[in-house]
Length: 149
Image (cartoon, rainbow, N blue to C red; front, side, top):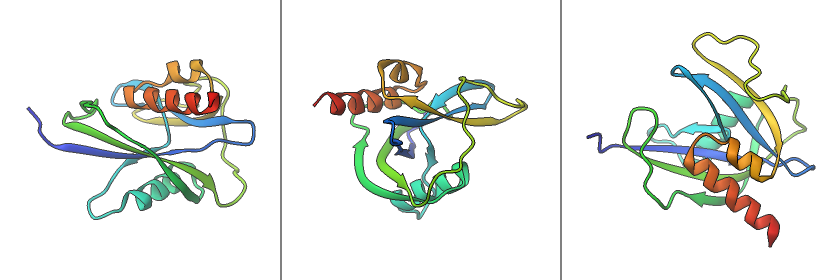
């Protein structure tokens, strides 16, 4: 049994139309939909991690507005086992976004070993259902509940 921790840090980016930025990816032999972000590197702060991940994945700089959620239930990592700990921040771009986006799920230009695309999704139950991983589903549900308040 792998007793290590896998720490992941994600950004919640909503545009003016209240659409959430999501990423569709193909890696490790399967396609999945998740929120932008990734793994914390040793010695890195969680704030620097989410900023680095957005720069690497989306090619734009962000400001971190506030902490939104940290996993408060057990989830085993889908990649390599161990306990998954995910941290989510509400973020905004420093400059207008010029990111290429698609409208159709898994509409990759070319799938070899790895592929990624971005989409804007309205904040709805469908968005929650399209998330592949349980923590992302939970976080989208929390965002939806905020909209009801």
